[in-house]
Length: 219
Image (cartoon, rainbow, N blue to C red):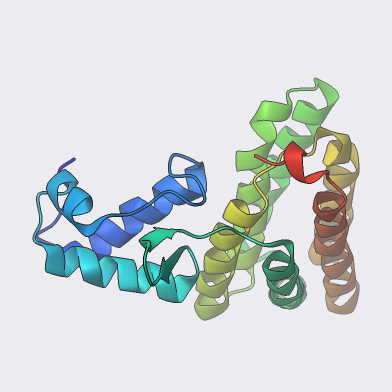
């Protein structure tokens, strides 16, 4: 596999990004061994950028290194997921609050359109259409906060949560998009405190539903 755009981006970052994407997508499952020599051959690289990429993924929690086994894909834990939830609740709540200060800003119409499409997908029971719409709703709302650093932090947290909590929850779909509608109404009406409260409650409800899943229902 030849990494794209290696001239513009350090090779270690290209490798780290592509391996991370494969972990999040489930192409590389928890426990899968990540041998430096195999990755070096796959990415047509020396072992140094591979080692640097793996070190970065270790620092991010996607890879773990043990004494005799070497590097392997980490096993995400529920406890780590709950720690992420608390971080995400605070950040998403702040984003909703700031977005409400701006009444959605220039992105108000686009967020409303995503909401409409999500509600339509729920009505038609097209549950496979929902994950990207959920990501779009939260991403656009973060952008509407007007705080670029907050937007970037939230994207990092959401990426990690997609890996920890990989299950879709069709039974949450109707409630989820009803909650999205309430959040957006508070944002567009300019009620920052209410928008924050509703968003934090929404993120918590999603997390509670994931935690309640039997462990063999994940994936």
